[in-house]
Length: 112
Length: 113
Image 1 (tube, rainbow over the protein chains, first blue to last red):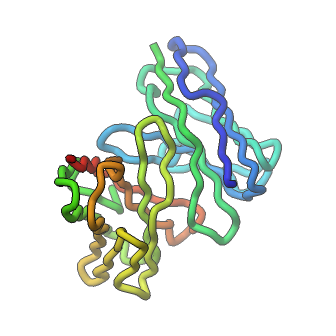
Image 2: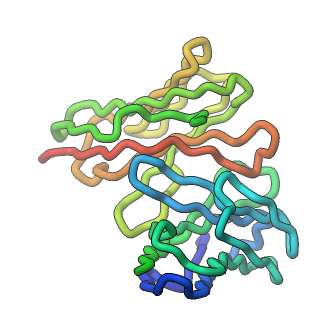
């Protein structure tokens, strides 16, 4: 069964902290994505990666960075968390040639 | 500039009746569309898709219709069930990078028992 796992369901961090959100997939997918979901805005792509050590900016990369050292793991990093980064973060993966993405359960991040 | 738009943030329907969720797009290069369903505190799950070479795709209670000339698609759920209550997102792969999906803002469907 397809599985994308995000390390935390809920996270509370302070303004200015460095935050790591981890995502692991067990499907040997080449593509991995980080989205954030906000009311009225839907899912917006932050970054994606189509191979190990490769990354590309999505629609809203400012304030974020990513790391993909292994095929199965894609990390989202908030270098200095701010309150406007309070959101639901969703990781997804897909195989090469497919448009269907499989999502993790999401991480609800609150920055105080 | 939202290329995929869902103009109804919410929809309430009586159990057993039809639910119709709408989605409009602006990019005529989009050639494939997907619908995802999302329950609270869970990630979205794929529901149904349609290629631009078709105007209809059916899977059980779910049917998606595509009107290319109007750049409009709709998801029909018949009959609606309380378990269908969720947020529904339509999405399309970016023509320049088919890996990326562009999502609409979502429609919260509530099916009343």
